[in-house]
Image 1 (cartoon, rainbow, N blue to C red):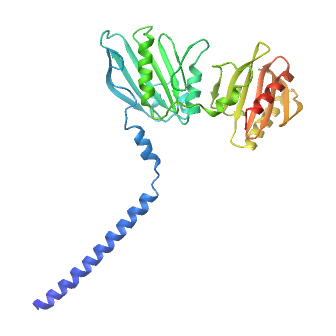
Image 2 (cartoon, helix red, strand yellow; image 1 turned 180 degrees about the vertical axis):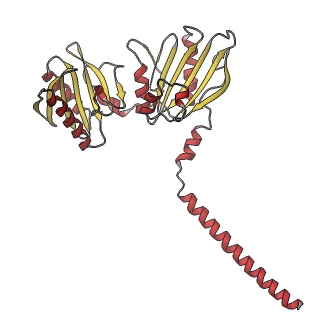
Image 3 (cartoon, rainbow, N blue to C red; image 1 turned 90 degrees about the vertical axis):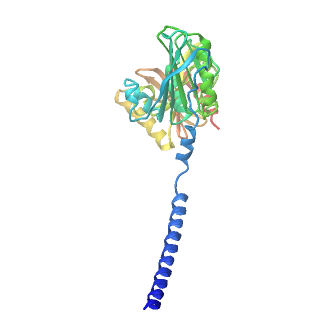
Length: 323
């Protein structure tokens, strides 16, 4: 009986060991299969947050990071900027890091720092360009920045940075610049030019006038996202724009919808032959003389013209900006 029991025990132990080996083999294979298909993006995104985006205290003598740094996502951004949250979401808002610095030499002076991460460098520039007014002092930081007595803003890669004085009508420029440079140095994205903005730089281009609009260029729903800028034509400012479509069909549809809108108002468009296709000219009820042309997946345009046909050479210049 003893030997029979021992034999049975050996048989049971052998089967148990064999089952364990099979289980571990399948478990290892499953883990390898799972890891092979896990996207790497979340790891990279987490890596961006390993280094704090806001510098610690003493970026400038006497300034201290006060309280905890706050983080916001698309789900709760409205709690921080309720009136403007929709605008930021239109630009592909991803997250916000917000902090507050206090002057330990004058506790009534504060400085808020908000770092917004957007969907792309173009979206970050779009937000920045909405706040950049005429005649502001431009500073060389990131892609571009501006500074006033009470605030400073700049964009760099996918990031849009706002610095605002608190408890005072003005702060020394050196304080804004010190914090801005510290933030710029710590951002994951290095300063780099945005290719699409170069399309606007034709003869007469007015520096600092370029803008990116995420939807509804010129206020028309059928004109989706696009770029705008001002140029001088015979000392008169006119606006040029480029609609950024995803396909030639989309660009053609935007132009057809615009033609239909004018036709319903009894406004004709005159067709002109261009090197790269037809150019349509006419008078927009809101923007005076206008010229339009489809170029691959883009729509090139000029508005604010005293005579629509004066837009033809500007359209031709825009054509040459494309490879």
